[in-house]
Image (cartoon, rainbow, N blue to C red; front, side):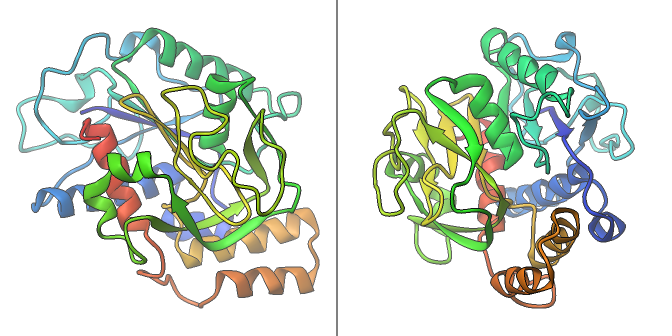
Length: 317
């Protein structure tokens, strides 16, 4: 399998110094997930594309026919610094068509196309892939979730600023029954049971079904409501009614960050506080919401979420 990762932002300096690009962080998590799922060491080959710099996979590199391979190795086609050859295979993964595309988070708003001119070409690319390349799967996290929604579901949904402000910290997501059923295997390992996934959050925008009128306790739009079939809402939290989107066999998105741990979220929010002039007291409250002082492995369901994404890319949903 051949995956392209589209970097839509650069991590804040403290995170980049320890973890590198978002594409590197996703590669590590998917590689660890593959090792757990397949009970053996797995080498994940990844290619990062600098979307902000105008770099997107060429359409000629996308898969046009079903993948005949039964391999579950995640590989990429590219030219970036984190790609590597698989010494245990006679097939060079860099020559294989792209089977899946992963779009990272970003501090940019999907509607800010005037100040961020790279967003419109990315949106058009997503639309082209979905319409013309049915054998290529799409995954997006946070900004990736929002731009996929805007590209493929508008006007059924739209993206706007959250009326209650940022959703930050480890957040419990009540999963919809169709999504939990599709990924029943990994969801059995969720910390709070198969219907609740906890992920790190830091977002000030959200995806809203056009038919949905916001109210804190309103249930409309939390399952499949407001979405055209066969789209499914992944689930909802107390502050955000659409925590992801799922189109079986084609698209999966998460509003949350399974690639974030406590360290990444704290440092990201410290930098956001500086950029957005939150003030010392607000930054203190935000860091308290995130909690802890180390990486806090195990306080959320990032490993399960990574296994869900891996299974989606492998076509095992």
